[in-house]
Amino acid sequence: MSAETPITPVADGVDGAGDFGFSLLVLTRAYRTVVASALADVPQGARGYQTLAVVTRGDQQNQVALATYLGIDRTVMTYLIDDLVAAGLVERRLNPADRRQRKIVATARGVNTLQDLRRQVREAEDRLLETLDSNERQAFRTLLSRIACDVRDMDLATAPCDVTPDPCDVAEPGS
Image (cartoon, rainbow, N blue to C red; front, side, top):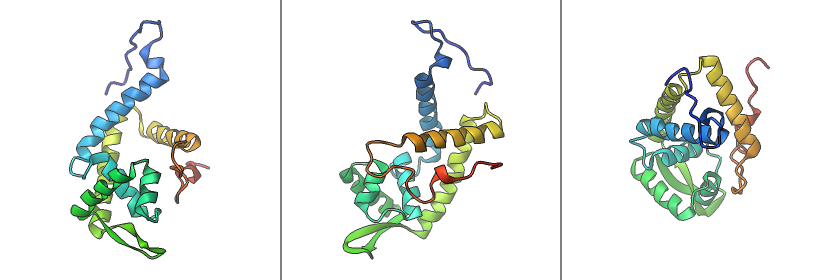
């Protein structure tokens, strides 16, 4: 990644580097590409990784709540959980709060895999953000998290930041 961002004029005279939406699009595409290699062995890639991360926290009481939280169709979630179970990363257990339901729980292998994946994803993200120094990277992550927690996904019944620990409640360095 280059330290200088080339400015490419577009039809209306606005440069691509100053267009917020275009910048988000480019960053999102690059993120998917860079992180995909780190998640190549995870069932269903990034979706499986995010599901494993939420399951490991133990916030969601059942598969429907998990699907709602992640914004994944309930029928798709069933197949995703099947794949994670087959990989030995999670298991379905009776939900102690309601025996009619199954709670999705990370296995010891799933927890260990997630720790390794988090390291790999962080390394991939650092490669993506290498144009920024370490303080800028942390500031970028903090600001991005603040924005995400503020706008929240209006389509979800459960907002992404309404679980413990809430990244929006984390004190900023030096405060």
